[in-house]
Length: 184
Image (cartoon, rainbow, N blue to C red; front, side, top):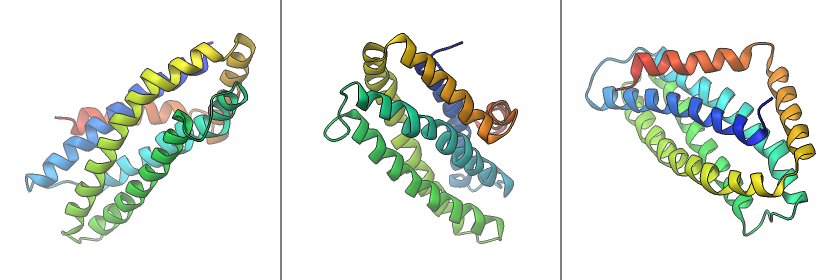
């Protein structure tokens, strides 16, 4: 069974596929091209369910507390930064949800609002993923012992099961599908 850091890094690669699709949708909006209303809606659904609920949920409910127990500080350290960035990202996602819904209702100005929030989200997440992959997860590898890593991997499996059988795999397939359809 892969360890918690490997699981989270694999999920980062899945999220990056969806971000490439999101970038492609934004480029089409900016070029004045037609974008079917379901494209931004499906991307936002992926972000809300897979990136936030599943991935960030694993970090916030399990990884971060385990790191704190091993002496990694929440305040003034990488955990606090990650939590702050999760909240900022959720704000951008709320804006994308509202804009995607308005776009689906035929409000043409909503496309620009979607692009603005999406570009901010993509910039944030690119930096966020880099920090986690290169700083936080390296700390985790050094401070978490084998039993804790095994317990975290099991907790992550329970989180995935709570989403529903096969849901994690469905979202991984969705990220690939969206990337094929929209990435430029």
